[in-house]
Amino acid sequence: MRAVREAVRVRVAGAVLCRVRAARRDAGMVTSEYAVGIIAAVAFAAVLYKVVTSGQVQAELQQIVGRALNGGG
Picture 1 (cartoon, rainbow, N blue to C red):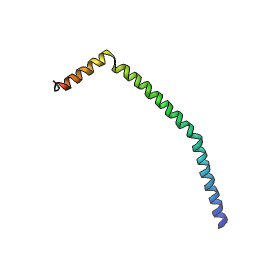
Picture 2: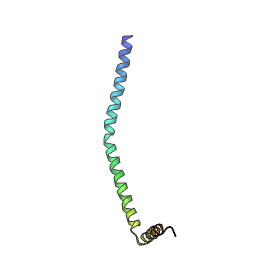
Picture 3: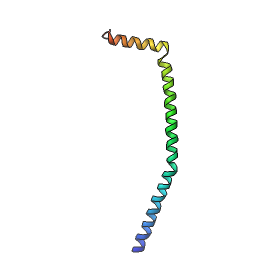
Picture 4: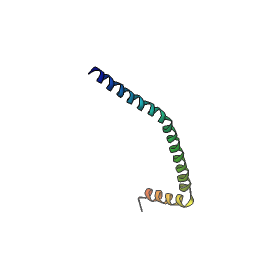
């Protein structure tokens, strides 16, 4: 019985150690994924800025704000 418990303990400890090592290998990927996400967010922000600062969109936004300030009329 003691030998069986020891064998199970060794297998469980080995499985845990294997998962810890796998997690450490993947740690670098998380950082690169954040970097790609930040780059994508900055690119989206740049495109959105260009759209919002275009003449036609600015005029529409000013009309919307003007209507809101004048009571929606």
